[in-house]
Image (cartoon, rainbow, N blue to C red; front, side):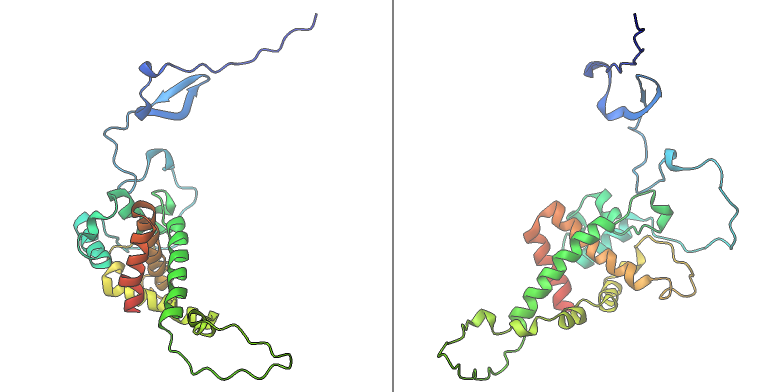
Length: 245
């Protein structure tokens, strides 16, 4: 008779014996959950998670440490959100999302979260509103009379399609240039609170500061859309971004 292979069956504790808020997916032994108290732990945006910190460096740094400092003050961040979103702008988003939207993946090796996905969503919203703005605000060109059709056909015409020729890739790229978005971000003071790590503090533009500021603007729009809805985000794009470009 063949011997049955031994299989380990994971047993789960009942809910009354395991606090869901303190449960960790990592296990010390097979079938035994690793319960880590998290009630007194600092939020992720404020401190690097202990499990993501290596006990030693993999290699020695080949350059001098960069003395670029980032903002850690909540009051300064809230003032910038008031500038960007208007009155009570510091109350539009939750505390964690406010920090996440201004955190670039170069900061702390991305261990505290970063704003790539928020920026992706926000850019799509700004792109849509830019197209609508071009269609509604582009100057109407005097329409040239169509050439006579040999078959007597009349082309379809509608007032909503008069500015359609103005909606080109060039016009949108001129409106949404990263340099213009970066200048707008500096007007709002966003460069004083964005958390990132430049390659060379003596050459901030060469280190990618315009793109980082542009991404932070998009990330704020994406965060507003997720937490306040699309209508709120569309109003922010039209009133706080496109009207100032």
